[in-house]
Image 1 (cartoon, rainbow, N blue to C red):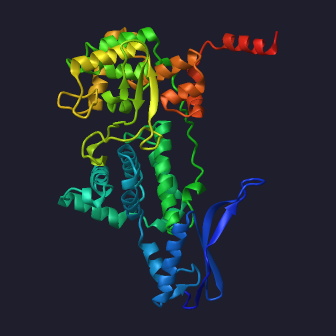
Image 2 (cartoon, rainbow, N blue to C red; image 1 turned 180 degrees about the vertical axis):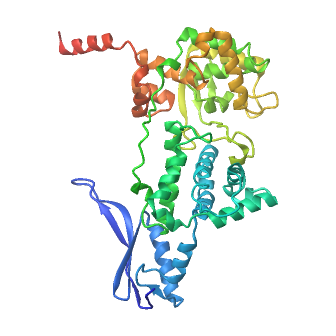
Amino acid sequence: MNTSYRVRFWEIRSNTRSEGPGKKPRIVSHTVRWTVGNREKSSTFKTKGLAENFLSSLRQAAKNGEAFDLGSGLPLSMIEAKEGRTWYSLAVAYVQAWWPHAAAKSREGITDSLAYVTPILVNDHPGRPDDEDIRRVLLEYSFVPEERRPVPSEKVLRVVRWLEAASLPLTAMEEPKHTRAALEALSLRLDGKAAAASTYRRKRAVFHRVLEYAVELGELSANPIHKVKFRKTKTSDEVDRRSVVNPAQARRLLTAVTYAGRTRGVMMAAMFACMYFGALRPAEAAGLREANCHLPETGWGMLTLEKSRPESNKRYTDSGEANDERGLKHRHEKETRHVPIPPELVAILRAHIEEYGVAEDGRLFRTRNGKSFPGSTVSMVWKQARAFAFPPEVVTSPLARRPYDLRHAAVSLWLNAGVHAPEVAQRAGHGVDVLLRVYAKCIDGQHETANKRILAALGT
């Protein structure tokens, strides 16, 4: 390795991209420039903060009298650190960095995705533990912030030591074969069968972000995932129209719920009604409070949604409970959404409050001890209700297979009733583009109406 102590630094250069005539160019990246001997070197970062941190590290190394490598332009201490970094240590660092900024479900998705690829990105090191043990340790210990980790048993420590010794050096990720192996793992379920397209897409996105993180830290020159021509899995967000119930079927299901789950079903009936008549997401219904409800004796009411209570493993929540209270999906934390509700739902909610009251914090839907209904219990009640409401051949069909399908039915009903897409999107908490893409196949019977309107506009 050829080195030099003659180092010179330049100011950080901001790189811009034209946004069109008359518009101010947009800064897209920042480049650190320096020379080692007579050789010019540079490294580009997405944010100025990352560029400043990198330049500061270079300056500090030069101040400490370190030699710089003529080939890479890096001080020897940074080369040693780069060569010593493994995929496992990067994944652990990524979880530590992003945990405070992610919701519980996002944390769960990140750790689950990393637990798929980490056992693949290893050398053939002796003493490999069982795959099940590796996955359990990654989920319950390694990919959890240090302050949340349980006291490790000797078995856990053995797995961790093996991962630290066997994990591929990060520099090996430059070889496409390792990236391809990771993508292959993400495309499969634990039982070896093909994963759903949406599952693969979500896990690949996590893998991509971790590699981008390494690029930002200067530990990879470029994201190696872009070098791999892995097969593209077709994905579709469109709602299956076979899952959408009509109003008569929806009312039959809401009645059947009251006969399911002993006492739980009747306590959940109004919650399911909110999903159908108001198109609430399950987490939004779980977070609904009496103060959010305007329920007049006659006419339409109004729900002002401000909180949701998504369910996740307690390991990933800030509260240590299964449900963390969050803002509305895809909205700022304090942003609200107003949903007009028809008289039928107003009457259902008034009767529910009169019969069961509300929790100490005002929530409408909760168990006897004040907690949100567990997702497993909700699914069990819904399964029983479908069996009560439908004949066997319909029970085995996709029709209203999940409680979430009630929300799909509501939005589909509004669109087919001729409600303008922006109004439907506002009530459902969607963007108009997402709304039309997701529900495109659920809009029926509009051809004649459209033809009449076009003829009227043409004046014929």
